[in-house]
Image 1 (tube, helix red, strand yellow):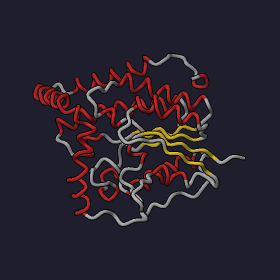
Image 2: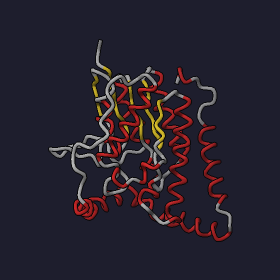
Image 3: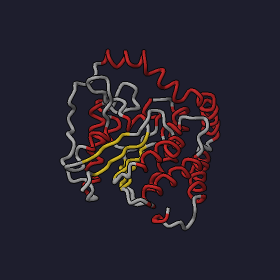
Image 4: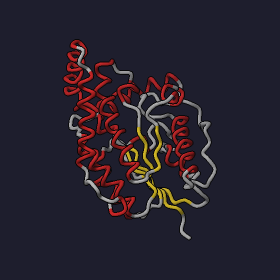
Length: 282
């Protein structure tokens, strides 16, 4: 019998940013989870920092399908929300195609909804709310498609663990080692409940000491600012316009219209997907 094949897809979260290991490499939650899936596991991490759902569909998915995975994790979407080209219709269509492709081949699909980047970065309300609205839209799509394709889903978009600074790296967007371990532990729990994971759960306690405050500040000064600029630099003019709209609607008492418009966009995106397509023929 061949080993269980686990392939991880996504962006910097799954690549392992925030969980460096000796020698300069990255580990991350997916590698930690792989060790607890069973006695014999072949693990491949295809996640790439900065990836959006387009990269997932066009680059990562074909490579993953060629590996014939038994389990595939698809955790992505934050980078889409940080671009001026954000389109929930396109995000929904791409995720539907990706989930369907793996489901049709009998793979167990792992998904997760994620916290909004504005809150994690501690942005002012007028700037944070548009990003939160976008992330809620992505999470709603992920929830709906996860249910449609019978994915094993981890609800990671809220809860006390998000406010525990000990779990997060200096950039506030990526978990540190403790946070990656928490992510792996939570995924292992839902996989065990689903009868997929048969190995020992990953350790919750970190292997390496947490970075010092000085190290965190050094990272932010040398690399962190550049990372944020690369991810959302093209969004800034649009985000300022969105923030101005937030202020105007709040002054008029019509902020609910913005939430209603976002909800309608999500409903339209899901309705636009092929109606009646059976998941087993996706």
